[in-house]
Length: 146
Image (cartoon, rainbow, N blue to C red; front, side):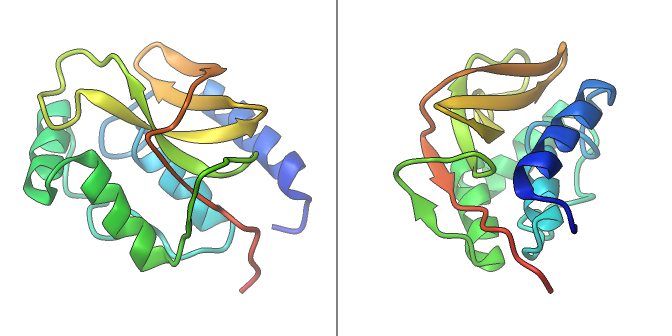
């Protein structure tokens, strides 16, 4: 991408508003992974992309990995992302959030993108959620060129 990261993030958020959630295509796990790849990193979801199409399938996949946090940590490590304590706009992370009907391995954590100032964005079944949250874990998504 040739535009600045802030402009790119705003455009990313705008597109998400108009894109319905679809398990295994545009969901709370793949949307932040897609952002990481758009920033020039390797795809942190390459190991699980295309391997589920339903909430139950996502829960089973996460369960086999030891939970969503373990699944994301493996993907973040493979993509060369560094864990951070203080998130900034464009970073990705996992937030504690009430989830419905997705099984014990996913319940409670969702993938998200930091939009700055402690605010995060999450793809939900009801659309794009924006709000203040404290991540359980976050990774720096530095702007890279290939």
